[in-house]
Length: 454
Image (cartoon, rainbow, N blue to C red):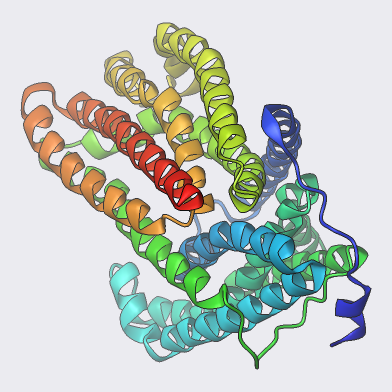
């Protein structure tokens, strides 16, 4: 056993109950808003330097696939790592928890390295797919940038796992604020280099990811958790955790196609339809992403702790309390935003070529998309509950059903209502998804209670 593992003699502080989730929600939410503010400042600075130049086109096209892999693969494994870590901590103490984390890091790094290798081998066809409108010279530059950005996959992937472990230890603010590091590094790189080439952004992104990883390593060392992957050895929780992780990867990949499907089907409705859908989704996407990140990150350790303790009564009480509180806050806010929707669109977009008639359509789309917000947020909570209960297969099937329902409703509603019909379809899908997730979570908890009593 390594000295680091031997030193890990304290138990991780485990949050319990709705108050702990509320504190974590506020910490994550505040840090996430600050990170978004840094990102917005970076975007404004990049826009002032690059405008809509070909160099920025190259960077964004090259970043698309590595960013998708990190978001889907690493994010999915991070979600299942928290309950697995807390379970190992309670079953075998700190040493078992550390050992499991290091084994998971080793397996995850192998998977991420394999994904990066596939990116390298398929870089040419992938660039042709995502940048078909580029000239041959521009595609070649994009391919080279993509090759360099493949390093982002293992670096950021391990960072997601380490962030999840810090969340399990009750540390939420630092992982949520950490993405601002890349924003700061990018601005500094542009100021110091004075260049506006695509490679400045590529190198700044890699340097930022490396800096984030270093901060996470130091934070883990403070908690006496070695960050080095463990290549040999086994643990009873490794195989089930990896299996659940791949289920979530599949489900997340499938669900990610809904945006593409909606945009593709909006394109069938004539000029301006895709743009109207995109503009109408901006506010909802911002609210949903921040809310989902804060609530999902804050809730998972508490839910996983109750599941690891087999405290099903406390788990049910927490689920009821948090769900009701989420609905009590989100429903009034959603109603206010729906009422003010037309004014929001006018202030936010209505200038220049964006006419009042366009604003009417976008406001209608925005109103119908806003309906989903309370259901989406509570659905995220139930999704984290299923992850804590080890029911990732239910999430996979739920995402498959959501995609099929989305396509069917799009076809039915867009013919009658146009682009707003696609927005209404999306909101209905999230209502149905919440009902499905709630049903599956209750079934899973009941099965766990029966298993404990038998």
